Amino acid sequence: MSDRILQQAEVETRQADALDAFERDISDACALLRRRLAEGSACGSRALAYAMAQGLPPRMTYTVAETSSYTGVPMSTLRDEMAAGRIHATLPHGQDRGQRIRVDEVDRWMEASTR
Image 1 (cartoon, rainbow, N blue to C red):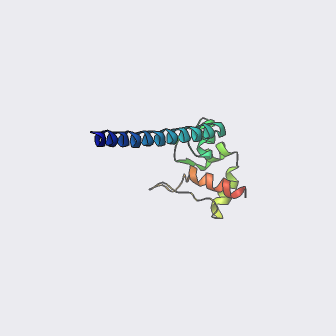
Image 2: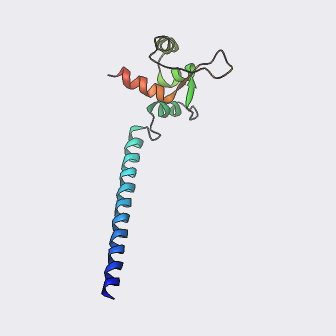
Image 3: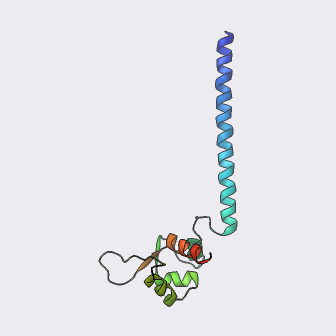
């Protein structure tokens, strides 16, 4: 009988350890979310946070004009950066106009530009 009680106690200890680890993970995730909210980038992308702050709907890509609007960077500068290969843009399939810039590309470009 004492072996069974000992085994039960070990199981309960493992369960408590797992619960403690889970609580730490949740606490860490909450702290990260609080930091991102304080930075204004809860979505993880500064560019997307800027776009949404300008009233644009959340999307993975924006036109050059929209990107100019939410970054404050002139369209001509964005096009120059695209031509130089420092910003990568995509053209939607079947279109010959309306290049799109991914928000993660804007994040990368902004990070590279501040170094």
